[in-house]
Image 1 (tube, rainbow, N blue to C red):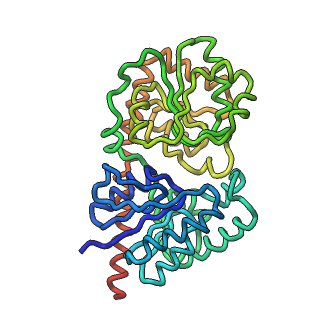
Image 2: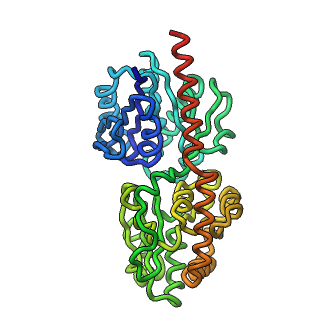
Image 3: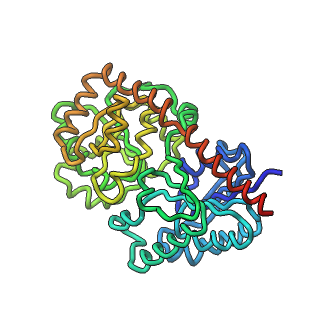
Length: 378
């Protein structure tokens, strides 16, 4: 009989790459896995994972009132051996599962102590106070997974040593869905995946594209991810109307569907400004771009520079330097063979050093350790 595992989030989409395509898929080889996510549907990539759907609400108040009771109603009597939660709001529910005999893993995916400053919703003083209280309680009772090594500075005095499971790329998944490289393109295409916001340099990108248009009339940028500004905010950016025809906003998209667009691109963009916890956290897209043989354009943070310069796979620039961004994009367009070499370097580094396979081992080691201790106590 295989141990039963619950992976629960009230926030993440039903095709979240880390929860679904990495953790869920990996664990399903050895455990009976239930993935509990908003609007979850059967996923052909996860034949061995049972999906349980939750209602989704943006506001935390509504999630507490409606989503959390549904979690209890659908999951409480599954009697899992391990409950793995991905957002701090689920800590009270996790304590209830713990009372019923489950072991709990609390995964920290962002440093909310720093991230609250840029949150536009669910950022009241009361929520901050409650987060601090329950986060401290979880440290004393649960096993913790941290997605970044830098979070160790924040998460100290834990009951159990924290386990680092970084969000590196599953090259096997990327290869399965990426399609043919650079097939059918008649003009240079740049690629962006992730939250689209001014904090993530959309304003810098617009300014650079205006200058790029002076040299190249034919280019395009595909942007995949939720947009965190209004149409009015965009139109107020100087020159936006002149380049908006070069942009396509796809919204949040299943990774399986956006990978073919990336394969046909000349470079991947991952610029972030030095705010919140961005300087100490890897953008997951870095490693996905590398696996796709795309040269990278990213911020000149020391953490990022360590990856890009060592792998010789792209450019680290100031997130405010529109001239430099224009220059780099122009160079990539004009030097396709040199850009291809950068992309190939990134692919080699992704396979050798930044691959999910290495992180999967840490994940399995934690699960085995937890379940062994559970058996010994029984």
